[in-house]
Image (spheres, one colour):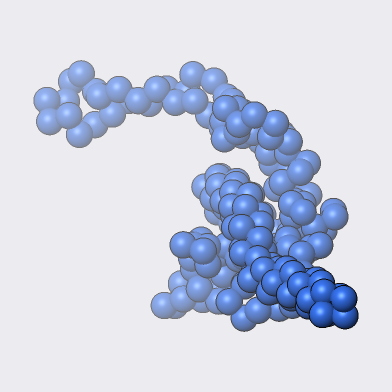
Length: 191
């Protein structure tokens, strides 16, 4: 009878240890799956910020310094709709005639086909409980030329909020950044 009790206790211990081993293996797997899902969404937001910043720069020769300016530009900004045709009197087809047909809002131009896109949500990091992307803009001298630059960032602790902290602190998990304040680039660190 004592042997049966010992065997039963050992069986329970074996099952428990097997479960703990399984969980030790599965925690990083679940974390990576959720991290990849969140990263994809945050990267899309950073790409949207980059697109709006590039549009802003094309019209103002500098990047927007903050989200208030960027949101105002999205809501109130207008982009000319231009018709360009070749000059019929030019046989080389190098001269063109352009005519402004009207104006379209920046938000409609960039995000009309995007379901559920809200201008006011552009500044918030998904999954961060309302934290904003860090963003700054300015100008740097590169090769003797003054060049506009911007940078937007989502810290890993913010977009991975609620996930196991020991996994978030891993050096392989990184903050997501688009642009740079040191180099004239609009690339993201995920590209």
